Length: 109
Image (cartoon, rainbow, N blue to C red):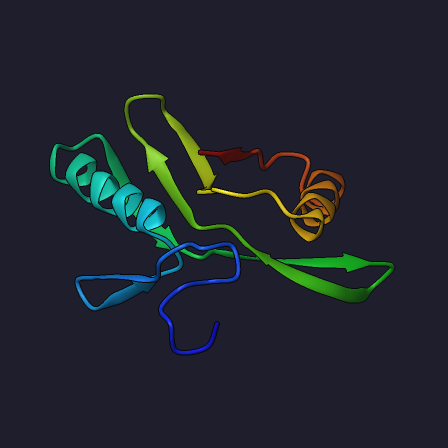
């Protein structure tokens, strides 16, 4: 629905600190990350880190997670995708991610 502020899955596009998010849920997660960063629990927050998905040297597509950050509490790099609805395309990209980036675990929240 063009111009409605909603995606085809009824997620409401939300702007926080001048940044557009695809859903209220994603915007809320970002705000919680900022709070955790202020509290010294996380650092190096990256929005939409790209992962080129290449097979035999051919770029099939690029997967963009919603967030990646270093969790100081858990002492590990975390890659997060905020999902309200799982699409078949997303599942396919997840399988490619697992095959091409075995050390990266995408957490769905």
